[in-house]
Every structure is written in C-alpha cells, then in structure tokens.
Image (cartoon, rainbow, N blue to C red; front, top):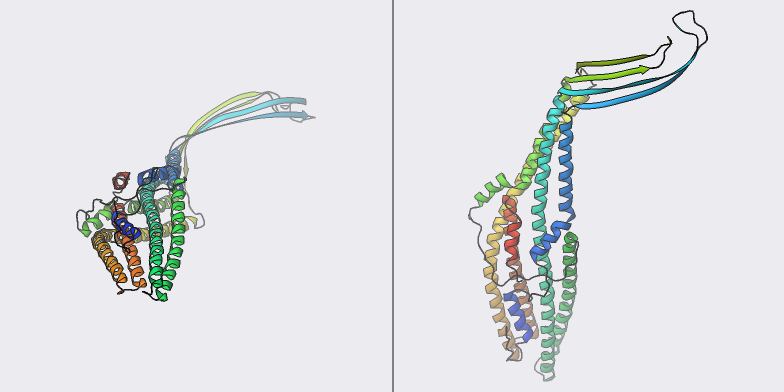
Length: 453
C-alpha cells in the first residue's frame, strides 16, 4: 500500500494508522504460529485435557473392577507344620510312648461364584454410567480447549495490535510535536499547545509500556497450554466470511443445547450415577447367595496315635447371608445417597439455566458483533475524515494541537474496537456451537483459514 504525504500535517504515520485500522493489524511475520498450529500443540501438552484423558482411563478400570465382583473367585492356600512330640507316659494304650518328629501339609482351593449379590449388580451398572460420564467429561474438556485456545490467541492479537497502535500513535505525536514547535517559534500557536503535545506523548508512552506487558502476559498464557514458546501470531485477513447464525431463531439454538450440550450430558450422567448409588446402598439390606466349592488335602507323617494319614476333602454348597441389623448404618448411608442425588439434581438444573444463558449470550453476541463491525467500519472512515479536517484546521488556526491529538486518539480507539468486534464474532460463533454441542476441531480449522498464512 502506497501512502502519499503531500501536506505537512498528513503524516505518513497517521495514514498508516488508518490503513491499519481498516486492514487489521500488522502484516504477517515469517514463521508465525497459526491458530490451528497452537491448538495442535495444546492438544498434546495441555494439562487439563491430558488430565481428563487419564481420568477417563482410570474410571474405565473401575468398570472392570465392578465386573470382577460378578465373576468367580478362586483362591488357594497351603500350610506346612513340623511337629515334635514326646509322650512320657499315657494311661491310654492307644497312644504310643516316646519321642517322634513328623511333618504335616495342608493345602487346597476355594471357588466362590456369586449367585445373587444385588449390590454388585447395581455397582456394575453404576460403573458403566461412570465410564460414560468420564467420556463425556473428556469431550467437554476438548471443546473447552478449543474455546480457551481461540480466546487466548485472539487476546494475544489484541495486545499485539494495541502495542502496534501505541507505537504508531507515539510516532505521530512526535511528528506533531516537531510541527507544533516550528509553528510556536513562528508565533502561530501558544506555548500551551506544546505542553498539550508533551503531556499526550507521555501518556502514549505509558500506554505502550502497558500494551507490551499485556502482550507478554498473553503470549505466556498461550505457553501455559502449549508448553512451547510462541512469539509470532498470524493476523486476521481483511475480509472474512460474516454470517448470522443459521437458523436465525434463538429458540432453535436453546432447544438444541438442551438436547445436545455435552456439559449437560455430563451432569445427566452424574444424576444417573447418584441414583444408582441410592440403589447400591439399599442393596446392602438384601440377602446374598454364593456358590462355594472347596478342595483340601491333609497329609501328616504322624499323630498322637503314632500313625500318619492322607485325607482329601471335596465339598460344594450354597452360602446364604442375611443381614438383619447393622446399627442403623445402612439406613444412614441410604439417606446420604439420597441427599447426594438431590444435590446432583440441583446441579443439573443450575447447569441447564447456565447453558440457556450461554446460548442467548452467544447468539445475541454474534448478531451484535455483526452490527458493530459494520458500524465501526464506517466509524473508522468517519474518524479518519475528521482527523484530516482537524489537521487542515490546525494549519489555518481553527483547531488546537489538543483537538488534533484527540482526533488521533479517537481513531486509534475506534480501530481497536473494530478489530475487537471481529474477534467477538469469531468467539461467539464458537461458543454458540459449543452450547449447541456441535463444536469440534473442524470448526476451528475453518476459522484458521481466515488468517493470513
């Protein structure tokens, strides 16, 4: 883009400022990290997502453990005993007299097959629900990562743009100060104009320092989720596809979120798990029935009678256990589980209301951003024209330096707001899909194409 500087006060820096406000921030830097690049790094390194993944694996093991309680249990045992006996005397002729040493072995197997254990059956059903809950939690974490990466990336771009704007505005003020100094020497403006320019220069310098700190913090926030240094970001293209939500009915999106929102699915699973916990605690009142089989062998080389033996026993039977009274513990645990169920129900209700609010906010946010983008784009052009008019007026003595500086500042603010509106459109579009339960990697990949490569 070629910029003409035909008139003294039409500073190249200011023209660049206007062009930047319309064309959106800086040119793309070589080696810049794209939005999708950052997401893929975060997908591998983000502790929250990895934590959700390992939690899912952990809970899946719990399902296997619950299944094990319904399967046969086989255990073995073995014992060896060395006996030394010395019968000094005995009135019983059956017993021998004298010293003997002998060994004894005792070993066997016990097989237990649960026939009816209602607590284990309910526990297995509950474990399946917990596994589904953990899977939903992982998918929620993936959607959350998409939103977090997009938010952090765009916040970093805002900070980068604010710093760029501050630098350009600072150069513009310096040029204006030079021009004002020359006009003051010629007696065309009062000394107060120079003081106004100096004050504005100090203010912009402070703003540039603050913008640099914000940029550093934003890049550090990206590093938290990627575990890698990110110094350069891609810029949003001047023209991006802007469209209202389709369908354009708020109630459609609200209904879709109630049916499909992954966070709501997570809370529904939590209610199901809590309900099964009530059933599991009640199950402790029911009898249990097990099929039990035993095999054992007792082999001894001696005894009190002087002779050894080798005995093998095999038996099979049913073992019934009927709980009668445990001091009120079971009743208390059932009440506790019911309270937990009520809590889970209330959490589901709270989350439903929060999701409806998110849908409304995101839906209206998209529509509002679209209106703001159009209005602010016109405002950027109008503020540019106003700045040029005040620059002309300053030369003819109609406006003071402060009026020109205010116009420069206003153009800077409006340009930033214009950029923010475009970023708000992107974020609210993603959040609307998240609320509706349809957000996935492909949505982020599509938005990634809106950035200059």
